[in-house]
Every structure is written in C-alpha cells, then in structure tokens.
Length: 219
Image (cartoon, rainbow, N blue to C red):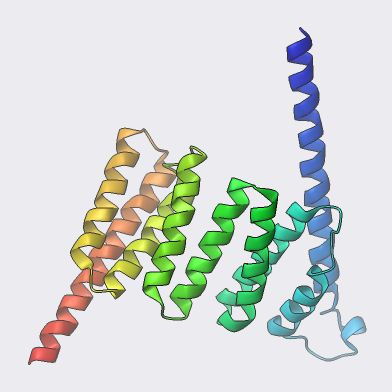
C-alpha cells in the first residue's frame, strides 16, 4: 500500500512539473510572438528571423530554475533557425542545448540535441558528421527503449539520406530495410511503419537519382 501511494505521489509531482513547464513554454512563446503585434512593433512588419533573434537572446537567461525547459527551448529555437535556412544562427543554440542536456543527464533531451546537431551538419553539407550525431541519437533512443517508433524512423530517413550523399547508396537501402524489418517484427504502430517505409522509399529514390546522375556524367 505504501509503495503504491508513493508511486502515485511521484506521478502527481511529475505531472505537475510537466504542466508547469508546458505553461512556462507557452508564456515564453506568447511573449515572443507578441513582438509582432503592430502596437508593439510600431507599425513595422517583424520578420520570422527577427522573432527568432529576440527569442535566442531571451532564452539564454530565461528559466533559471528549470534548466530542462531552457534546454527544450534552446533546441526548439535552433531547429526553427534550421527550418528557415539559418544554420550559423542555429549552431550556438543547439550546442548550448546539448551541453545542458548532458548536465541534466536526460536521455530524451540528449537524443533531441544530437538530432539537432546532426541536422545542422546535414544542412552545412557535412554528411559524415551528420551521420555520427544521428547515430548517437538513435543509440540513445534504443537505450531508452523507444525503438521502433516514429522518432527513430525519422532518424533512419536522415541517416539513409546522408549515406547516399557519401556515395553509400546500397548501404543506405540495406540500413532502411533492416530498420523496417525490425519495426515490423516488434509490432510497431502503423504511423511508425509508414515513416520507416518512407525512409526506405527516400533511400531508393535518392539512390536512383544518384545512379542516373552518374550515368549522365559518363555520356
């Protein structure tokens, strides 16, 4: 009885912390986007890049009592910079996020940070470095028993793409096939299987394109 009560109290405390983090993150983003309000911006149109710059400046001193939340926001802003094609602005945020994730020893945040750095290297045209970071993220997910799953399937997609970029098309296809087979054997969800199939299809498509380009170069 005491053990069950203790577990219930722990779950309640964790749920309360999660709710507090979610509310703090929401408030941070609301304040950030309020800067685009015409009254605040004095009639000037605020660009997405300017909003992110403001967020990057604020987040470095935000959430002093909740380093996990600061880590999440650093990684989120870094990912958003990547999405608008600004890898140089993303880099310091992602690296700071990784350092905080390592200090917190949170496998989920570490996997997220490694994924972000992998995507950064990919955006910068460094496939070998990208694969190293993405494989590190995949190992963390495996250790956390989150493989198979949609998050891992996305990693398989990006790792396969970078393998093709390194001229390892056959290996990329085999890698995606093994991941799909493992997911099927472990009874992965339909959503996860879709993304594993998508990763394999992307590897096949990129391989065919690479082979076609090679043939064209010989003509």
